[in-house]
Amino acid sequence: MQISIVIPLLNEHESLKELHDWIVQVMQSNHFLYEIIFIDDGSTDGSWKIITDLSQQNEHVKGIRFYKNYGKSQALHAGFKAATGDVVITMDADLQDNPEEIPEMYRMVTQEGQQVVSGWKKIRYDSIIAKNIPSKLFNWAARKTSGVQLHDFNCGLKAFDSQVVKNIEVHGEMHRYIPVLAKNAGFSKITEKVVQHQARKYGSTKFGAERFINGFLDLITIWFVSKFGKRPMHLFGALGVLMFFVGLCFSVYLGVDKLFLNPTGRLITQRPQFFIALTAMIMGTQLFLAGFIGEIMVRSRKNDTRYNISDKINL
Image (cartoon, rainbow, N blue to C red):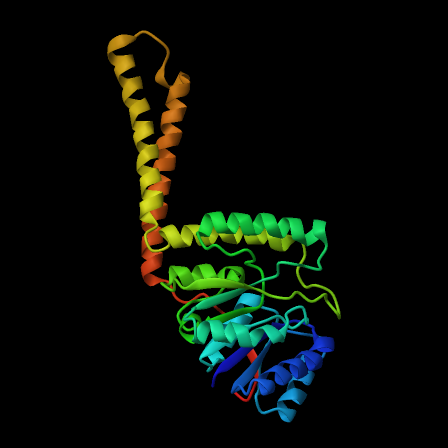
């Protein structure tokens, strides 16, 4: 199997047949051995019926159906587990990603030795205020924080060496940061390719403005995980010791001042330094314990990618 095309979807019944035919045309014209894996993320519009019909017409079509909507990350994770191709292509089901880009992305992985090729929609047909400007800010922050120099983290069209997708865990809302996850897993050959962006032909977007808020929160999460995910005590423990030391210094100052310098002055509990010392020492203890508990969780944690599959086709 040369190419596995993984397509997560939610209520995209209008575009599935056209997308399938377009992909098949590209695959056949380039004589690729391929499979198309549709992951129905809890659709309620008859998308699964169309996938079933397509699988009966084309033996290369496979399908996974979730009992409910778990999110794009869980859908991609299921698709990655099922993929058998040497190169795994991800793309959206709304016809905004152009299948004509697949042969060149495949070549970049197999001939140039790239491990991740991320699409860059340099020219977009989205609303400037609603998507373009927030997307530019988001991508700038992602580059600065992660160190991965990509212009478009949100582009659904990507190509991966199969070893990449088999060695990373995509969960939560981390689908935006698969190149960052790949980098953290030791895959350093990451590049991008300018791809054509198609205007949405059917339906409406499944992502609102909240995706940018969630994206920034996930960016903080992945920064923390990449820096301290396997050693949380290095962050929380260090902060805890620092806070406790500050509180201890205030306590020593109050004790020396009361015993030797100003024994007839105000009670210690009437001075603001007392509350600073008390608060700092309590916070320091809590942070240290958080780091300790984090270390225990790291050593005992299990895969957090949970989803229940309702049905499968050809898998």
